[in-house]
Every structure is written in structure tokens, then in C-alpha cells.
Length: 222
Image (cartoon, rainbow, N blue to C red):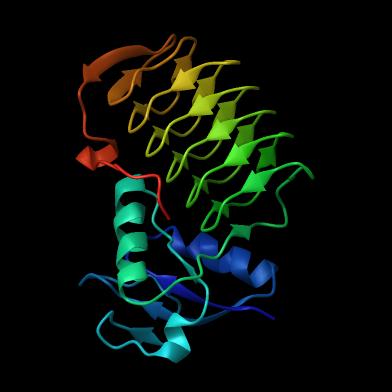
């Protein structure tokens, strides 16, 4: 049975991650509260601060349960600085995953997803409930994909991009780094980096954005 540490406890999506950890038979040894505020960690699990860590905790694999790409990136960097070195990749057993899928460390695949063959996911990718991703997808580091999104075959998504819930990406389109596809949008053509697109068909409504929630993800590192 695997023991893991939760780094960052201030997001309600932690509830889903706890359920997936239960389904794969992993135990949460501790949660790290890296910012003041409400903790969504279940009662009975030890809660510690970044300044109250020892090797018994930092030697364990860690997972970052934050949906916003920039927040997840910052927390992952902070975890590294505090001594963590083993990002935990978590795939819900209710999701369909092909033999040829490559997921780099730190990724999370929530319940009920369907992932296509010959696809590659960068580090700390977050795929939320019920998303469908086609074959030969290339998903960059720290990408977030919302619930129920449908991504067709041979789609490329750049580092730090966010794909909103219920959106549809047609085959072979490319989404630039740190771009945002609004919920329910239908993307029929390539989206440049640092753009917000909305609608059906999706159109650029804002350029030169930093990223989702105005937070930039500037590195492809773990």
C-alpha cells in the first residue's frame, strides 16, 4: 500500500483526489497547508505546514490537488524547495487508459475519463471528471482539462493551458501555451499562445493574457 502526501489543501477538488487515492489503495500520510485559509483535507489526517516538515514526510511521494495551472505549478515548485522529490502520478481506476499512454510524474486523471492511444501527457497534468481525450494527443506540462471536455485525435495543448468544462476541440487543432478555452466552447482552428477563446465556433476575445486566472506557467519543468 502506497503512502502519499498532499501538498496544498485549500481546493475543494481535494475531495475527488482523496476518493481516487482510496480506490487505488493509497494512504494519505499528511497534508501540507502551504497557505492560510480553509483546509479541505478530511478529518483525522495530519495537517502540517511547510516549515514543519522532516525527512519522514518529504521522502514520500507528493501530489498537488490544485486545478488552476499556475497555482499547481507554484505549489509543485515550492514542494521541491521544501525537499519533496517524488511527484505521484494518480490515475482513477474508473478511467480507460491505453497501453501506449505516457504520463509524466505528478499527473492526475479523475474518475470516468477516456484517454486515447499513443498520447503523451507532460508533468502535473490535471484531467477532471469524465473528460475524453483522443489518440495521439500531446498535452503539455501543467495543463488543466475541465470536466466533460471532449478532445479529438491529434490535438496539441501547450504548457499551462486550461481547457474549460464541456468544451470540444476538433481533430489536429493546437492550443498555445497559457491559453484558455472557455467552458462549452468549440475549437475549430488553432489558438495562439496567451489567448482566451470563447463560443461556437471559438473566437479570440482577449489576447496577451498571462494565463488562466492571470497566472503564467513559464517553465516545462517538474
